[in-house]
Picture (cartoon, helix red, strand yellow):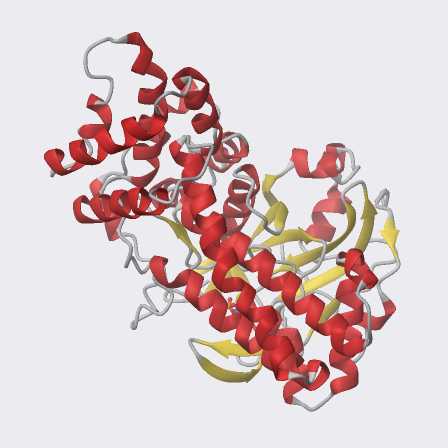
Length: 493
Ligand code: AMP
Ligand code: MG
């Protein structure tokens, strides 16, 4: 059976050579479904029945091509851990092509589909463990309302893949309007191919930011408008990451999306206990990508993008002005997010200090970040009940209770005279009950390695609506077990 009712949109011709090379996936033996995402499938206008077709399983394993698919791997470069790394490229991701969907044009990409001309010394594969992490985290981020690439399915195979030990292979099908990275621009700029940089600018603007086409002036101004737009989107993204306690782990410029999406899930982690200097990537010895550093690293990365665009923008002051917007946008977005989390709907000069003092207290006592916000949201809803100390459960999270109580008095004064039951409901809509805690991902992976994928499926369902109650999964909203802090997540994937 070869019925693939996918409405392929012709690949954007300008993303052919020199941006990408035709590269068919390498087949994998005995593929099987690990997880499928019905809700994304529906959103793409495709019936989830497609997951029951053997031909589609084969296509998502990279064993056969969908009709009209032109599989391509693209070339990019980048700065890794602050150092120019030269050419990288899609070493194990192969774009099958773009489909025209109700979500707009979407690129479908198989990650782990075999070697490409850009694999360097890599095997082009991904292991089951990292594929499950990417699948679940993309969808968890989407559920949280954070811009991200999506994940349609994970296919596993008994084929061996060698990392620190022998593991098995998997392919995750990623979906995004575009996988273009800062590194794509850096690549062609570093080669002195300014025409290509210009084509990239036009492609991104036309396909993804058409409003910028109104920009008055020439190419110089269009490139600058793109820089400004990406700066704004990146600032908004960083504020969302920080507010939810997400650490990316490898914020190299080749992992930064020109569209401001969360991209390339590797050694990421949601904070359990709040610790500003937390480093989630065991390969990050210097802590370059520690949680608290993410916003400034994003700015550093934007600076690299600006440098790549400089030969087109030409006027240094124009580029600096575009970058400069980050310095006010990021804190504005961040404090707006944090006020939302606190249920504060207006803005006072003293709010930033209230927020900073809270984070300092949480950092000192390593308070569980997600639990704190959820308990605070619920407690606020109880204020008018006058039943004992409604903040007991929040206070219990702190070792230095007196310090926290002093902060709490300031906070309560700040809330007066709000309708606290409404405030509480608003808070519950922005403070998730469920995040992809490291140990939950780890438990799902351990079971999956034994052939039981049920926890992957349940996590997908719960994390799709993380602000809702899921009584059957109450345990997943609790404090991480002691062993969670021992989980080591490195770049190995
Ligand atoms: P990452 O650290 O995952 O962002 O990867 C950095 C670069 O290494 C990218 O160009 C990847 O495509 C490439 N890469 C990572 N793992 C592999 C692999 N197993 N085979 C080939 N290329 C890889
Ligand atoms: Mg990457």
